[in-house]
Length: 302
Ligand code: PSU
Ligand code: MN
Image (tube, helix red, strand yellow):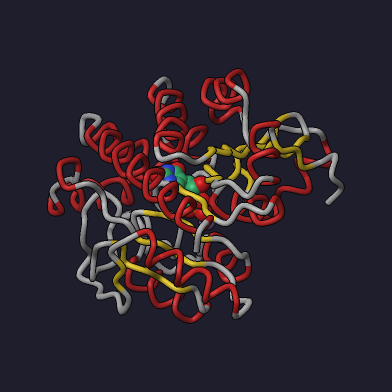
């Protein structure tokens, strides 16, 4: 990619040059995952959380054909305000937005791709994509991208709307290292546990940093740091599962498939829970940003 197409903000550029801690943040959660105006508030809050831990935030989006690594206040507001007016770009779609001078929010796969190219090792999101339920064969490219890109993604497991057992199996098949951060179970986004056991539990950012250093010394790719939703914000498992079943039935009735599916399901859950799913999503994303920043800081002296 030409350097003109991938542009770090001045703050991110100098932080990377001085080997200070930087945490990438994605923009699809803002443009397609959360409603206006909470999305802007969350976007700002994630950056503030990263700063509070002594790291520099780099929210990533394609704005008018430029892959921005770190947005200014006006660009962040534009992503949030325009929402689905921004395309939803996975890693494979980036080239089209860049070549055509278009704007696009970046998913986990696109953000991880750009972060790795920019030299950013840690990335925080809400929940990664994965294997969708049912037999349509819809598998997020978040998983295959994690297999190849040298980046650690902090996530509250994978979104509960997915088939989590299959998602965990596929992560293993793809060779993505999954670390439970303070947990022995794969988190289920809105709830802290899924009943799916994780082999590797870590309890401190320093321990994560040492494992990342060893992983990358072996020239391996992505690592998923699975950080459960904070206890006080987690939803009741039975209630959210009933709402998910209803959302999936509604999506099937309306024949919503492919890229619009995840945004549709999240918006449906927001209405069905009277906004409690949005509050949980916000809390878990902020917690992930905090852990991501702590890991990025630990990596600078690993
Ligand atoms: N985390 C959230 N909300 C989101 C997402 C992550 O809390 O909306 C986004 C990420 O960008 C992720 C995408 O890559 O959802 C998954 O989309 P799909 O299932 O179409 O691959
Ligand atoms: Mn998909």
